[in-house]
Length: 202
Image (tube, rainbow, N blue to C red):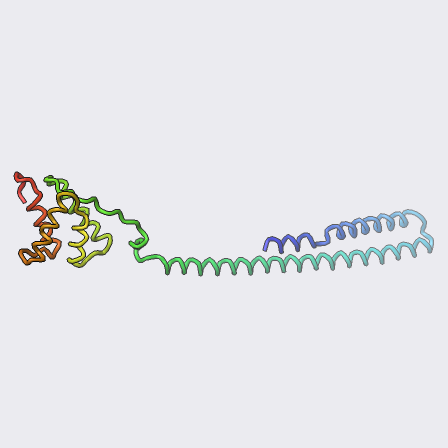
């Protein structure tokens, strides 16, 4: 758009207009000289000739000015149309972005890297165990883990050292029907019963 406008401005016959103005000045000057000088028939003829030349130059000048006005109007129309087009594209872009944005401005979980909870090693430390349980429950919410089976699976995968040995033993007990730990609440009870210090009430 800017190049088009620049092209139109550069194309305006400014130098030609200035040349015509100079011609008009010269014609008027020559006409005045004849009026102050010889008043013979020849001088009158020269004056009439210069007057005709003056009228012709004036007509050409007016035509060129009118042409320039039309050119400016055309340039303004081009700019106006470009602005309308840009506004339309901007509106479409804003609508597209609004349609892609999640409701409430929330970022989809799939686009966020969720840190894994730290494993629980089986230390008889109430604080460490409660932090492990808290971190897992946060992880369940962040990953939209809702089934009890999935919660138990994820929680036991984050056991290590003594806690993992304990879970392997309990897993054998479940397979042989001696106990059932099939919910997250049941697993939390078992963990607290096993790893809370003796002087801490569950």
